[in-house]
Image 1 (cartoon, rainbow, N blue to C red):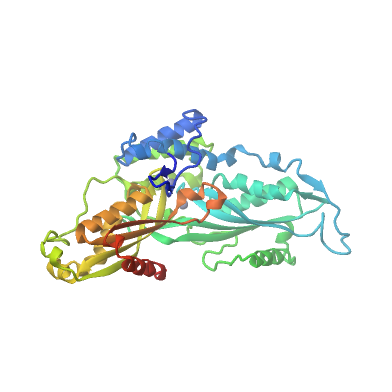
Image 2 (cartoon, rainbow, N blue to C red):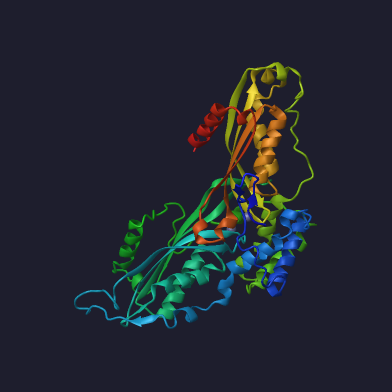
Length: 461
Ligand SMILES: [Zn+2]
Ligand SMILES: [Zn+2]
């Protein structure tokens, strides 16, 4: 699948697509093959037809992304650091600290991603490393980022990741001391017991780990290091700022209370356990024991449903003839309706908000009494199409078509979303946001209404 070409020569780039999709090396072989089979079990558990066009290649994509994203298990820090230690004379200690001895060296803003060990979703992080050279030798600066990357490409929690980077650098370089600060962002989902609602915010945590001279009580080094991070624009987060331990679980799935049907779950849980084993992790490690269950619980929120939308009698007489005779129309907007859908290409969530603009006539209101239900109705439509395996373009169109089917005058829908699959696909895409638009009926000809709606969308931020 690539970009779609339009008749007029334009190109539609899908909201979420995999640049590496054409690569088929190792397809079906070794651990990649077993992860693919496990993903097929998960898709079937969701009630999907695994031969369907949109998801045919999903097992391959998921396995490839997961294999690339956990390659740190196969990498060794010594291989990276060896050969990258260079002699560098430092200041005489009577004069001060700098160069190859005692001076602070900082590498800031290393953009990385890792996998949450509690739920297997990727999270993004920015890593800052400081170290104090000793013994008249320094390490090539790029190696600090490489070492951080090795540990981030494993199943992690923020604090564990900070500790592992710190102690690996301390052991391999043997400097005066090491300090690591991580800022991490995890998708935020609010569970109400029956369903997961997305929150536009990301759950964030800010952790650090220090060794050697950074731990010395009277040393100013840690303060200097943190000050240099602030110059770079790092705000210290007041909530969940931890100094060695996380106060509340940072992974939202750790506090979720979702129920699971006992008949579908066991094969899916076994499949997830086999995925964890295939990357070289021990599924019995304490932190990982509940992970397959949490992953499946979260996934089952997006189970295919054969039920239509139950509009609960909110719409009646919608074919009433008087609509066509009624020229007095007003444009209404329902803004910021949250949703969390599951990208069917990568089996990872995309979440954000939907804005709906539509025409409604006053007589229509009186005849069918919709007015007071609008927000609830729009929310129901968004949740119905949002809570399943989806692509953003289709979600946008389906919402627009459904709303048009109710009010049948004109509809404009804007969906703004963050794709978690983007996190694991390259630094330049970190934190990027995607918007899709569908326009139907009167909005196509009424440019005033269109700009008024878009203005509402911009102003509601
Ligand atoms: Zn998590
Ligand atoms: Zn995707």
